[in-house]
Length: 164
Image (cartoon, rainbow, N blue to C red):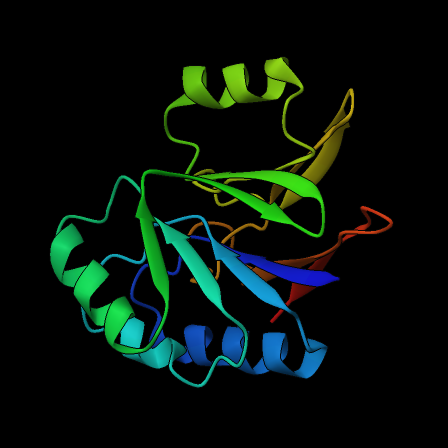
């Protein structure tokens, strides 16, 4: 199964639309958003996304209940600051990553096969023991100058960082 990972959209609607288009073209089966959507006008721009999407909040998501409502209106699932998901027999943790002690603890437990996080705006993936950690970077492109997302193959656990 191919899943998509995104984070740090920060109200950049044109790049959100590019991310949705790219994820649809990749025919991902699920999308995980690691937070920092920022404003309640952004969720409607995910309505064309064909795959189910699970969202966690980031440190810049202030209007959380409104964000939850807007995502719910388009059939997307907001879980809060943390989500535990099982996809294709893979245990996945989804969190923004701004709580570094929590993130490091999740990695150290080796309970999760995959951890998806954001916050740093730097795209990277690495293995820590049996856990693969993926930060898809930033959709917005504001800090790094590059808009990126990631895809993860649950069978091979291969990660690809895609520039938008």
